[in-house]
Picture 1: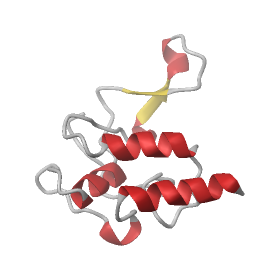
Picture 2: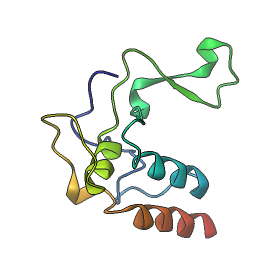
Picture 3: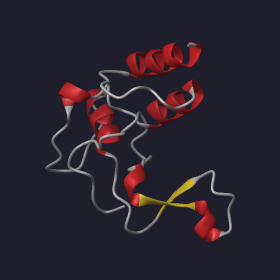
Length: 111
């Protein structure tokens, strides 16, 4: 993935103003992935269903045209990790740390 999304999309799982929709374990996995400088996370709007590659349609796959998720990059910036040159984190609409995000998803799952 050579480029990144400029801002988190309307349904970005890293946004604090979007109703949490992931299983808490998945939220924790992607939050902790943001802490590793070698990981990436493609914006779901730029991925394709694995059905296109013979899968069952349960997973999304990044392609050469996928872009890095702006919410993921904002969380990385919150951790003090490097982000692409020119990227402006969306501090005001994304979770401030891993605990805030995980707790939001856990709270929603308990309902």
